[in-house]
Image (cartoon, rainbow, N blue to C red; front, side, top):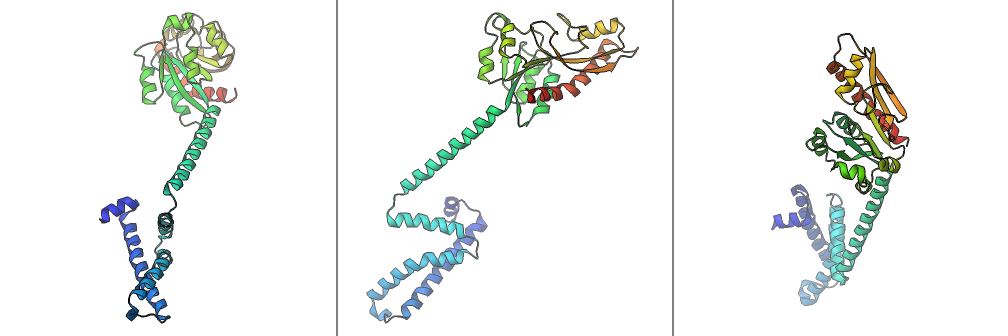
Length: 313
């Protein structure tokens, strides 16, 4: 019985003991007060039925006040206030259903308000899509940097290569992945409908090897950026990506290389430059060691620049 009451009231065992003590002590106080009040009248137990009727009426009215009084020092006032309100609704015959309906309406209204507030907050958050074709190390750094950001959310990863490492990175961060195929990307709608469905407001290319179609550039003017592993305008253009860039830089005897973050237009690597960072090339450097230096620059600067650009859009 005690277990059922505890579950019904949804309280801990220590609190259940305090509530039970309040019931017991309040009931005893009520009986004592009822007898004391009757002693002030001419009624006595010898009056039989009349005495007991008056006594029952008295303790019925006294009991709520007594338990509330005892509940204060025992710290259970709120419980008994709510308990007595429910009893009052039952005794007076007021429909508890109407009360519950009002409560439900309040909850629904509050829920609607919260959804509206959440929706308004989400509208203010810039949702970005990361396009990537490979392992996704830059995508991982951007996702990590923006995790929990109040104004920016990585809402989608777009990939054109089944089995690419970036797909696993998206999955581990609970970010949806959009797999795209060449025909629809270049000759279809460039997946604009899917991007709009995800409410994408900014696009970041992080190792994405396809050229961006004109339809996508027109839909996101000034809202698509790319990172290139060299100091543009040198060593850019069609076919210049990954290790091919570093091989060309080493073969040319360059003393410096670096990264270029730029806006995307209709031509490979020709959009307006946003940011560049450099590293020195030693005589002992190979394309592989240069690639490691470039990766370090990308990881250090790309997430920060993405955040800055999105916030000032």
